[in-house]
Length: 204
Image (cartoon, rainbow, N blue to C red; front, side):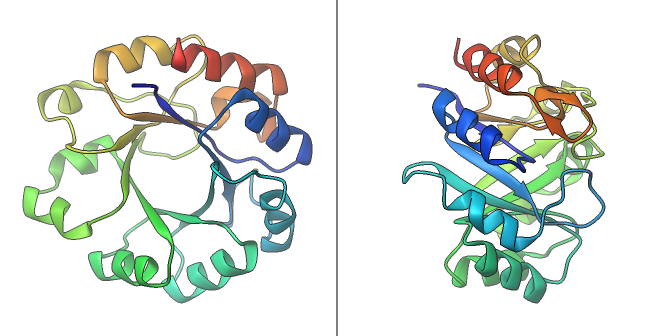
């Protein structure tokens, strides 16, 4: 089965088009404040309009009130909401009830510390296991994931690039991967060549 690939933190028509041409399954737009990749909902909406059917469009949020998340998600026309923060199962349910798919992002350490009942209560569409600081480009210790891999669909993020992704996929067997800083020429600036190389390596 082919690895599901998401390129996150896109902010220009050129890089969105490059990701789509490369055959990604999803593109992500940062709608949370404080990132060099943050764009506003209006810009995101113009980028979402370029994305063909069959490619998921993801709005990335962190530590924002769920009402605000839904407002921005609707304004940007994304199909999926990715939550990084202290959201509750009720928050996830509210986003799903509003008609969005949900990716719940959690650090590998926090995931390892979650009780099984707590994990099940979230009922997200996909789980994303990341480094402690999302978008930092740092890898994490995979030992807890090797000991207790997530059931169902889950995405690996954190420190991935075209040089490391194949090895990490082979070791951890995620159903998908998510990259942002690993396809940048400088912080916050995506590189078309690196996007293409990452997708090839992830699926190779």
